[in-house]
Image (cartoon, rainbow, N blue to C red; front, side, top):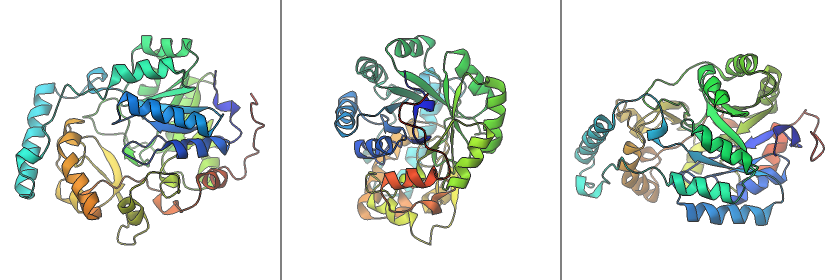
Length: 357
């Protein structure tokens, strides 16, 4: 079974749903000695199966697939009826602000949508994906046990010591520790709660002390240079995860508008927002985020509602009407092959021989 200790370079390519993660990117990271990831979020099982097959054509090395835990499996948050009402009210507000998109052109929120959870679980189990990771909550203990029995290493994204303890108690032996510096959605178990602000290095030290040496830790968030990675390794991480640093690589599926914004001096900071999806996420601060500071905590319902707006903005080349997910280290992203970024981030670490334990 896969372990982080087997990586020649202790760098994980973050799963980035919505386009940036591609089979080419996952394979490039793995071929460079790291661990590449596919993002199964927002895709049906058939599309994920095709991407898994493509990765296996491009690399013989281990890779991972990330799944979103559906909201029904999470703890905390408001009731379904309250979240639907909040998303519908937000939809009406957006229709008033954007008269070219009246309510009948904005998708209705669908609380029954679980992102194809059962089908994707069956898929990664049947295809024996080397690493299966979960974000937005804990899958059932039986789910993790079945994947482990099938030969998959299981990882869970956590943002606090308490979430880490729950994951370990449920059987996880690999944790992705996501700090507040990370781009994209925060992986908090409680989608409606305020995400923690504990810096990543402090989180790594705290979880390492609580979990002990039997649990492997991946540190994620704001990592743009070898010095960042070395500091986190010194805090107790077994590997670091990079996402924003890979957005400009030619293998990434980052949209042209997003690529341009990452290099545009008009975007000079990142900020947290619920405006696009109803779940707290970090991205380049733009007009839509500024105009909707009170968007409801109703993921994935808000994400469904704004889908048309975001797609139209991207098609029109408008970076201020779409999500531009990026971590605090976005300035370190450069348009270079993913393998070069993996090598740059891991510079100064003695590479491990392939297959070393």
